[in-house]
Image (tube, rainbow, N blue to C red):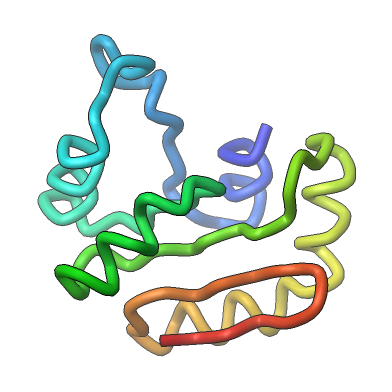
Length: 106
């Protein structure tokens, strides 16, 4: 659902399940694909921000700290904040953290 939303917003988004054994991809594999294909990792998994602080960027990470959110609620939440999120992602930053309280760029 999120990849579909991002497609609708004009991004070339793919879910990890698009890749062979995608549901089994390790974080290092996802990071490698993102670097090789110049992609942004969109995640709710804190392992990627932890790796960002240890290893730096690339790849760019959009970290959604929104807890267990239904897809409809997630896309509605993002839609309200989309202009800000899109503007920040276009600035070639390393990581964007989006939570209910704030948006932080690194």
